[in-house]
Each structure stands twice: as structure tokens, then as C-alpha cells.
Length: 193
Image 1: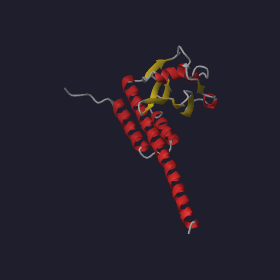
Image 2: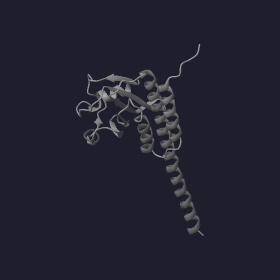
Image 3: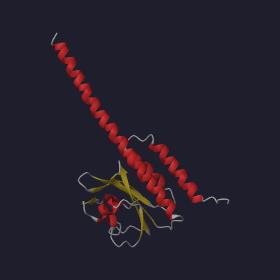
């Protein structure tokens, strides 16, 4: 049986490929978030996106957003450990919600965000949820399952970037400590001569 080409699938795979390439050389978390949000918001269906970081104490904060209204961008987005937003992410599923939302997740309705749907996707690092991507749009999604899978895939990728950046930070800190130790030995040897 011959399979019909899905233009949305080809577009999604093209965007995923570009994002994967750019993430492989991204130097900072800010850059990584920008790469994902900038590419995905080029899709007709997606109007805006954001990344929320889950701090170790369980508080969820907005890290990066693109294309949201100025009032939304300027507002303080800080959600307590047992808030609906934290519970939604800790549920561990990439999900799509239709507007109006039963619960005003991420204060979207409070800021009168014009959208017909919301997608939420948890971001994991070593299996633990460390944040989440959210996207909103007005247009009907032609292939929602495919878009949800693409966003879920990117959530895993951003988790990998977080892990890489944390590892690089850890190595850098330990390298500095080792260099200080070597310098101390050097100073002891020179002063004891």
C-alpha cells in the first residue's frame, strides 16, 4: 500500500531537524529556549510559546516566552508547589486543552490571551520533571497528534540540553577548584624553598 505524504509531517520533521542541529551547538539555556520557541512559532498553528522552570523547592517560574502580549510578558509568573500549573506538569503528559479553560492555567485568561487551545508538555532531566513548554494558538491544528508528539520530542531535547549545561557547569566549577588547588601547591613549593 502506498503511503500518502503528509505536508504537516514533513514540515514538523524539518523544524525538528533544524532545532536538533541548533540545540547541538547551543551554549546557554536561554539560547536553547529561544531556538525552540522561535522555530515552533513559525508554524501557522502556533501563536506563542513559553518555557517554565520548576525550581528544586517546587516553585514554577517563567524563564522565556515569545509572542505573548506585553502584559503577559511583564506579569510575574510564579506558581506555588501545589498549584494547578505545577500539578499539570507533574502529571507527566503532553496535553492539549481547548479554550475557555476550566482552570486558568498560567493566567492566560486573566491576561485576556486570545487563543483557542493550549498545549502543555513537561520537560524531563534524568526522568525527573524540571519544567515545561507551553504553546497557544488560534488556528485549528491540522494534525494534533503529530504536533503533540513533536512538542513532546522537543521537551525531551530541552531536558537533554539542561543536563548538558549542568554537566558543563559542574565540570567548570571543579576545574576551577582543581586549578586553585594546584596553585596552592605551587605557592607552597615556592615559599618553602
